[in-house]
Image (cartoon, rainbow, N blue to C red; front, side, top):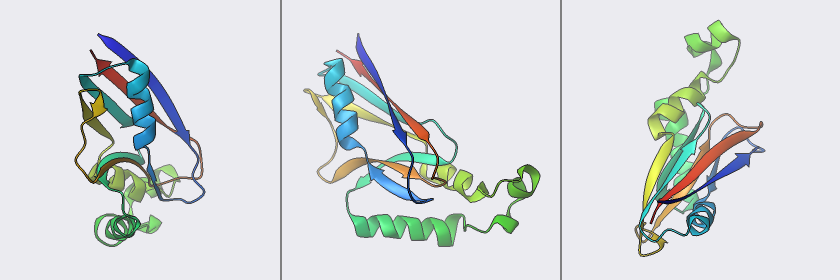
Length: 140
């Protein structure tokens, strides 16, 4: 079995940001030289996510608004985690659980087997400090 591992590091300017990492995932697949297999993409932090969706900035705004208004408002006094740790990022942890921290992308005939509008994204929910993503391509 062929395999290759890459790490990406992000230090976003904003506390929350969505970044398209599809091309980075494809570079890892190509470096592994696999034609059939899969690529695991996983956020290595508990306040970030990796997900597959449409590359459309208005949708990104909708996702951020949905997370803020419906899932986990950024209201530090609301969460026990914040009072117990002195941190203010409980909402980021809840957002990570909701969106998910990893995806597995199939590889078929030497290409990431994504749908016509699908791209792979890193979702940062508590940024402005270095965070990593692991990309691991495996297959034949």
